[in-house]
Length: 225
Image (cartoon, rainbow, N blue to C red; front, side, top):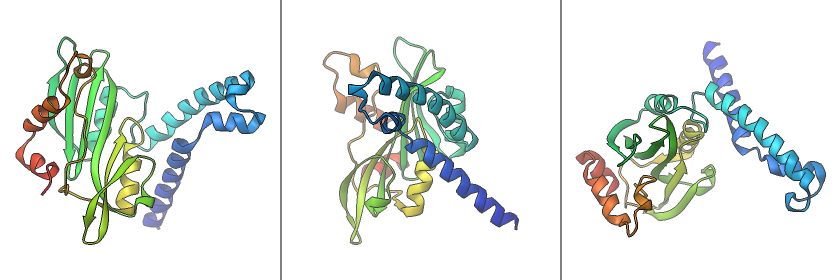
């Protein structure tokens, strides 16, 4: 009975998280007024009010699910990441600031983030992985066909990790396979917010320098066959 109850609770949590992530305040405002926000100030104001309330509700739902959400402190976000089984592989200062650039790894999933506000908040964060299976089971994310393995398509996937990371990984693991060794390395962006502000910066050189600092087993996994 306890097992069945836990399963029901997990399904209920997943449903609440899904609803919170998919809710579109502006769409709801347009549905209520019958007018597009660009044609109606009232629609825009209603959308803003709904968005403010929804952001509060979404943070509450994701927090209860031990997931990532936008208003988290860096400490809270790192706690979720650690509990999801990610190990820190790189941690280096962002020059001229108290912020840091970090890379994490769990089999098949590379997670990068940079901080801000003197290393107290998450500035940007994203995961990269290769998913083997039906593209239609993927939740909202950036993806493209990489190759076929054993006649099954493999998709290069990128996803913002600041919000709903636990839910996203659970959904794709349930629908297919995250490959622990990437068949080929997709486009990945391993730059901090300051790297790209330097005039004439070399994206490839910065990327390769950071990859070279990763442990050999991670480099082998992401660099393809």
